[in-house]
Length: 291
Image (cartoon, rainbow, N blue to C red; front, side, top):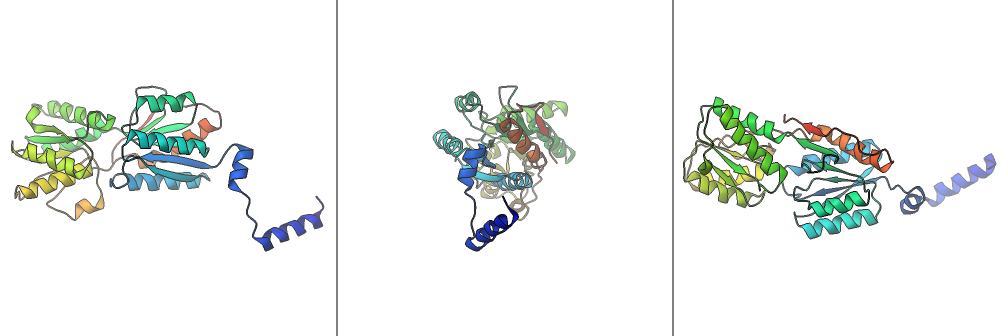
């Protein structure tokens, strides 16, 4: 193209405020520069920092993040996956804890790039970025023991989830490490990762008079706090696996530990992009220790 012609074309583009179609470009390049992310509950205070971290990591790499909230419902999750695939997202960050094995199997069959965030997988080749749940639980139990607690209760997340099962196992192992008996009456499985489920579990535990409660996440800890108030308790140690600002304002004192997922989200994005470009999945898994 002659220089003068090029100048005239660029001037017309500027004058008409022409913008190329991202859809057409995506069809031609077979790449949309978007990543999809599935989360189970956007109101859970654990997820906003994770979502923000994923968005920042994606933008640093020239990608936009498309967020889907599944409400932990399998049908809604499948619908969200279908939409993201139809819109040719370049990869997926799956942060839902209840993703059905059949759903993941279909994603694998289609060779659709994905990375599991904050959850494990039975398939060793699946790329995973997750917290070392057992280690985080052990650290919390050690902290409570250092405060003099011996009757340490645990509100576990649903044991059908990898996070719930791993944190409960870490809790039991930590008790043994410190010479404490794992008393079944001091552990209650919550029906969901929600404040109401935490309240119900804590009400059961408070009947056996623990001196401390370790909740598997902040929503469960909030429920435990409400239960303690209902029982007119003046002080209960209730560390949760995570720590968010609202808890600091609700007293009595609550311990907490922050997860180590966010620093690894850049790697999660990189893995999804790598697979999309045909490089295959690269191990090993990334397990962030809590901070």
